[in-house]
Image (cartoon, rainbow over all chains, first blue to last red; front, side):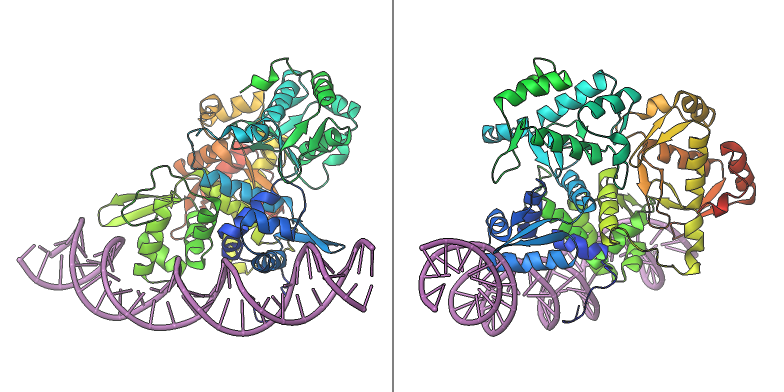
Length: 240
Length: 240
DNA sequence: CGGATGTTTCGGCCGGCGCCGAACTGTCGG
DNA sequence: CCGACAGTTCGGCGCCGGCCGAAACATCCG
């Protein structure tokens, strides 16, 4: 696009979008942003392993193509994924990249925390998220298929007690998608409902975000609260 | 990857995959293959607008990266998308590329046939597919959300009469995803069930594939059969 | 077997883009 | 104000990779 022109129609082609994601440095930044938090340019530079100048160029291009959104805050610039569509595209690419019926290669124990509980864009993932999903299904609050979930009548009431008004969520995004993540090959709760759940749980301090990572830290009091609220089985950590 | 090495672990990175899709010529080939039919190298060359030599190189790379699968047949080589994951990734990229809450720009009337009925990877799309989905929901055979669908008890029986055994489909892929396509912004039936439906309908000659295009041609007898089988309303063509 | 057609391999050209060093802009602190 | 820090812009280097022409290989057909 010639200098000075503005991408008025937001008319990207599929190749332009994919080509933006198709660079190691940019892909690393996007993967880091899949944690759901907005990150500064500097943090993204470290994630990508390139200098700040280079990063700045990448971020500008991705922002112009509407892959990222930026918010100025003092001398920092916070970048985040521009939309759930972008997150989903990256997710789909991850699924292709890891190679279909991937053999579960043993990952180092250092991401044990990640396997236990982490964010995935705007919702929870990891064993905790699976345990929550399982318990909700067991108690008849949710029906899950491979790609989505339905909230039942009883679920409507249950989520209401958590302060989540299911009816008001149906607005723009899918209510309850499921999301197959890399560590466990089973679906967990994403979509609007997944985002709302993460919100509530963070709000109540049951989980806290780890700095500079997608990991979620389970507080001591949080664990018992979660077990009680969702009626998790005592052995939920081993529910692989 | 150095020459002579084999990609044993199928360990692609997200950037490698995206970078393969992120070339105009290759993206055009992939888009053509989203129609679900296997195409020859020559046909793909024409779709991409490059010479056969260039095409050959592209196809080799995409095949090695497991984006495509190839089948020799005489002096032709038929290429198809290697998996539903690949189709979904391309689909997700299309959603990002067309720019979120895209304004419905009026497309030329020449793809009126496409808007009426076409294939989308392995299932039907277009107004006909919407009418079918609507009718199935109306009759209580299916419950649709934004991302997936559930077959009801009555639906199990209904699909049985079409020769589709719902229970046997649940094998590997999602039973019934929904798929938001570009022409109408509403979900239609994809996944295993969508593929099975397209199969049956082609098998019975209600629709026929147009050569070299994703369009599906509605035969005269096929229309009345479809209307009868799915109890489509008389004005289904205008169900935008 | 020889010619036509589909596809691949090889070699070389060339443009685009990712990278960094250096220098500039903007913001916060004292 | 003036340094420190975050981020961007500019310029130039280097290389990867897409493109095609020429030629080889493969397959079908008469």
